[in-house]
Length: 141
Image 1 (cartoon, helix red, strand yellow):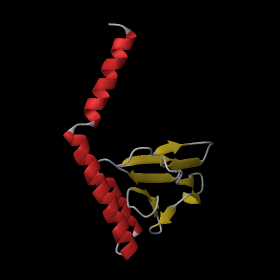
Image 2 (cartoon, helix red, strand yellow; image 1 turned 30 degrees about the vertical axis):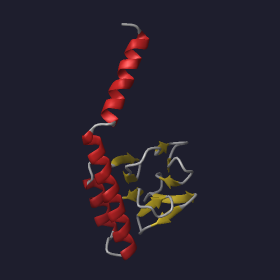
Image 3 (cartoon, helix red, strand yellow; image 1 turned 45 degrees about the vertical axis):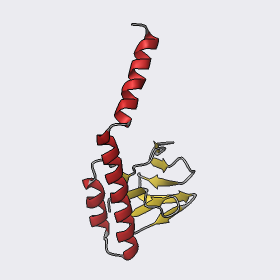
Image 4 (cartoon, rainbow, N blue to C red; image 1 turned 60 degrees about the horizontal axis):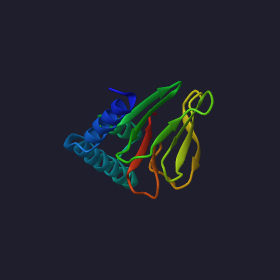
C-alpha cells in the first residue's frame, strides 16, 4: 500500500469518526453544558468553584494545565486554537477572531487581555463570541 493509499484510508477513518453518533452526542451535550454555564453565570447562580467543577464534568472539555493556569474549555464547535506564543502566556481563540490572552506565569493565572467579542460571564469564566454560549473558558480560581 502506497503512502497515498494510507493517507486516504486515514482521512476516511477520521471522517467516519467525525460523523459517528457518539461524536454527535458528545458535541450536542457540550453545547448544552456550555449554554447552561453561560445562563447560570449570567443569572449569578454559579460561583467560580461550581463553574470549574461543571466544566470539568463535561466529557468533551479540553483541559489545560500550564504553570499556574488550570483551564477548562467547553467547546463543541470547530476552530478552537490553543497556542503558547512565548513562555508564560497561553492564547485561546476561535475561528472568528475572538480570544483570551492568559498570563499563566503570575502567582494566580489571569486573563491579561481579551480580543474580539468576548463576554466575561463571572470571575473566572468567559464566552468567546457574541454571548452564544458555545465556547466557554473557565479558569480555576
